[in-house]
Length: 352
Image 1 (cartoon, rainbow, N blue to C red):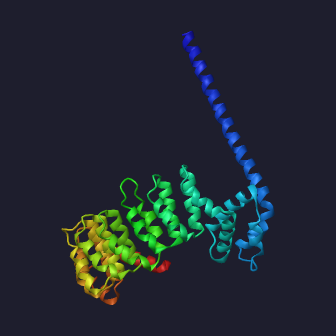
Image 2 (cartoon, helix red, strand yellow):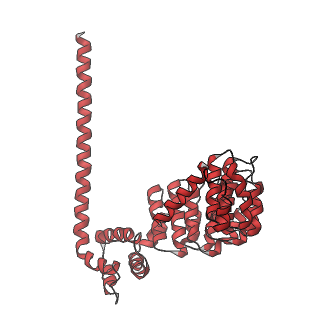
Image 3 (cartoon, helix red, strand yellow):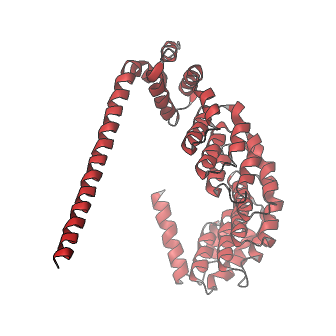
């Protein structure tokens, strides 16, 4: 009993000692961080006025930017770090002036060198800096980084390529989505591709034939978002026959955004009960987006569908089609789906 009590006391002392050491470590880290922040503020203090002048767009003669290029040593390092942070928020001439300061300081060249660093953090930060600096000559290097072993670096490379906006990188970014084991998240790729202009339309058409379903989905989604009508034949093919349901739903949505009256038939064809419910709903929404009167009879039939949500979507689509669409609701005024659709439409109109 005495031995057990002694062990308990000993364990308690050890735990309390560990807690004290942990508290001391946290205090030390915070103190160190505070000290570093104070040091950085002191070093940046004489440079802050010209930095604010440039960032606010008031450096008409370039004198303030020139003054910033004179920074040396640790002050230059602190300044460059602040410039990189500012570049995430400003655009135009002020951004160009700040990028010039980074170039004079050698920060862009240093970032190029750090892309081959053994540190994941350094590679990721270097990629981000190259993007923020709109360093177009580094596109091949950033494309190579899309295959980096670390997802943080791959994401940063895609982010940088999106900022640079060179359509030549669209193919590699789209292909990186389906890379085995080192794939790029679909959302990251889509965001980067959004910034690359109309020059990516053919890349997206090719992407809709990619073996990887996520790649096809992103290509279909962006074709609709960017109104690339040249991709309509591929979108129709995906809606009809793609083995992946999400790809089919995405294609239906894209057709709704940029399709024509001739696309009513293919969308209606996939609203039948034998199709997956999610796809049926996507096609009904697409018919509403398309807004073609030819879809009214098919949508009217769907008001009696066994799925309440599908019936509500059909009613919503009809309400958006003008007098003819509203006339098709005759006899269904008291249906829960129609009442819900009318209520939603009135709320949307009130908040517009």
